[in-house]
Length: 617
Image (tube, rainbow, N blue to C red):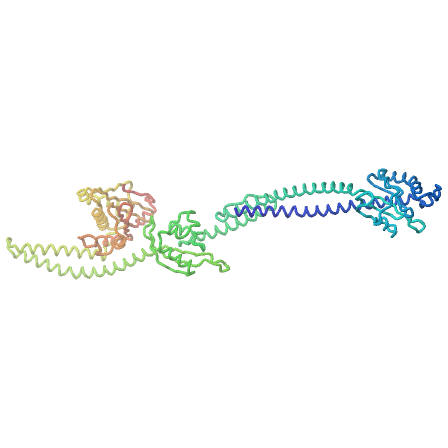
């Protein structure tokens, strides 16, 4: 509504600005035209009086002498002079309709003749004492007077008759003001009609111009509004000066889009996520890394408040709020963020004030750096360091324990041989020997953990090895109704390793999968490879491993089972690492997956195993 009133006021202002000068000009022209008409009338009447003065060759007394009327009475003299002058005034009034003319005698103080004939009744009368004619005769100067006189309301031009240096009377020529007013009214009407038509045309043309201008301004405004959100938008070509404006805006948009594309290319090439928020905390821009890390959904988040977009991330909201409210720069804050697909991410967040070149505060810039892989590398390195220390420790323990164990076992066997067969103490010597053997196997495991053997480093057929390992666990799986699924579609590329140790690795992982899978569940084997690596996935449909346990499953002696040493997975990891690979444990949809990654045999990388895969269903 407010915009409508602004528009109406603008239209009225333009119309008034256009029409008002026309009206003022018309009024001035009307006044000038009226004055010109009166001046023209005045000049016309004066000219008639001059003709009448020229037509009277003699003075009144000579005319009377010529007619023998010098001794006659005043009335008779007036009659004689009327007889001579009346034809003259009649000719003049016939030539100039609506004009009244006549002669006046100062000596006789009477109107001698008055044309047209309808005015002859005034002949013989004297003018009043205040009549302007008396002033003309007294001063000897001509005069034009408008007002009530003998004939009525008239414009009266009077010229004194001077003969032999004496004023003998005067002549006049007049026109009724009613007739002049009729002419003036007609002229006013014509000029008013012309002015009205001019004002209407001016208003209409102004309205059309304003309407056209509004259309152009609306198109420009809508185009600029569209460019605010979409720099690829272009205004349609307009005509005239407006076309130059729209063309300039489109060229500016081209330049801005090129600059923005260049900036976006730089921003999208960054690994760190960058988010820009205005002073109101609304998201205005972000790069692909930010969208990927924080799962920003396209244009839906643009213009939305950060409290709505990051409603599930209280820590991030708090950091942005601190920067917005206190203009405080925050650097390198660690933030654990749960991603819908990648799980828990370790992010580093920094915030800073967004300023213009003139130091005007525009909003906040948030930089998010993905430190997840770095954290995993740190954890892997720390784990490797711990394993190295534990390995050295395990080697020392194994060597220190095996020598006494050998002696204990030997003495137990000697005692057992010396005891009669029926002696009940032989049971104890048997238990001693069994326990010594168990401790000896444990010492072997410690040695295997500390230094996995690489003496047997030959090409291993993983397809055959996995098939053999599956057959080894199938009887135990059948006891619990668990299906071990491994479908072979094509041979896997060979890897350089020890077949026995790799069988030990897969057997250990499969047995763990069988223990984790529910009764009647499935254990699936799947394999894929590229020119560098073979990846064997072992997936069970058991419960997920807790996040805090998932990062420790390969640590020596770590176990959540009631039985076991906690060395199985750590030994498997050490064996795979000895051959240039690694094992990854992760929770997946519907279970837990262990992935064994091994490098492809060097000479096979250029062979036929390129990019095929085999998957277990």
